[in-house]
Amino acid sequence: MSIRQLELEVMRYDPEQDEVPRFQKYSVPCEEDWAILDALNYIKENVDTTLAYRWSCHMMVCGSCGMMVNGEPSLTCKTFVRDLPDRVRIEPLENFPIERDLVVVQDDVIEKFQKANLYIVRKDDPPPDDTEYTQSRGALYKFKQYTMCVNCMCCYAACPQYALDSSFIGPAVLALAHRYNLDSRDQGKSDRLNILADHDGVWECSFVGACSEVCPKSVDPAAAIQQMKVDGAIEWWKQKLPGGKP
Amino acid sequence: MSSQPYVRPISKTTWYMRNGRYKRYMLREVTCLLVGFYCFLAIWGLAALAGGPDHWNSFLESQQNLLMVSVHAISLIYFLIYMTFDWFKLAPKAMPVQLGEKKLPDRIIVIGHYVAWAFISLFVFWLAGVLT
Image (cartoon, rainbow over all chains, first blue to last red; front, side, top):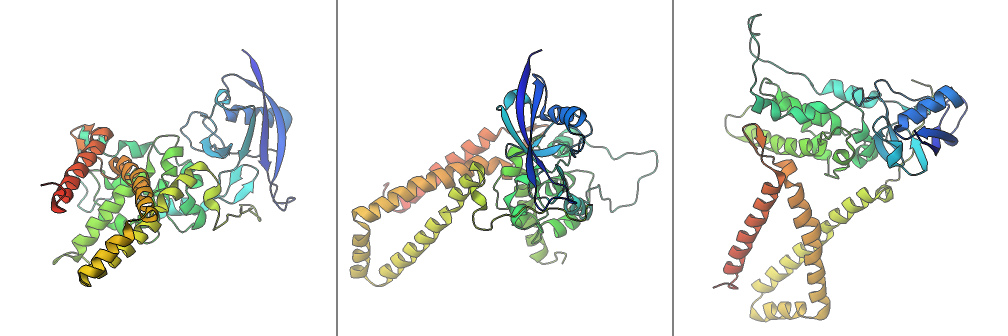
């Protein structure tokens, strides 16, 4: 297997020593089937054990290894060395505070995930223990694409709206909320829209579409947001009609 | 969490220069200036119409010079690229159609928009007396 020498410029930040982040260069002998995450692991194991970054599964499931690779929000486990030039710049995800090196503070988005009722809400009595909520395949396909989100937060790093105003709920939370809104078993859409079709919700989105372009799982959060705008408008009019719920 | 997370500064005025994706978005959004210009033009035209034949004819004359014809031609091309083509391309995202287990291909929704556009244009031309 041939080896290719890759020049990596990695952003480093030690909160106890650095005022601002700096770049450190590493020359890494990469095997042809390596992803950028393999190159980082090589540095960590052979060159510099102090380098901090998140990863877990190396198979596009855990969503931990999101970073900026040559300015593009990417899952480093699916960004292959063979698709990149000889010099690669790696930075922590944009639009998040840097905790250390390539690790970002995610608290803001995690709080937003918790706020948005991202679970199936039932308002009727629970069914007997031996029954299930059934769902047709057609009903499943309505939202299946949105279940693919791995919470890597690449979409937040790509979203200029979130960059300029972090009160915006943001793409991944809205895409997942839409997933539950479309679920035939769910009865919480109206409550969810009260939170998500508000000022910091879907209407903050100006449809740049960057979230969908960078999404490593093809979730298409921009589509979810535009559909929620339609839903939110319909819900608003329903409330205004005679007999509508306030 | 560390005691000093570093927050990278972002410019409120030049953020869109960061990448080509944002620049293309701004080129689309800048069409709002043209929309504003045409609103102004429509109000001016209506006021001229209300003012009588002389006012209306002088309004029409004011549009019939190289500068204004160029402005209208450039605006038309700009609107076609950044409003019609761009928004029609994005329409399937906002209004997906699912039939049973299959999603209607995006292409069909986009073509539907073009067909509707053609029919509405024909109607407007007929209304304006261009088509008899």
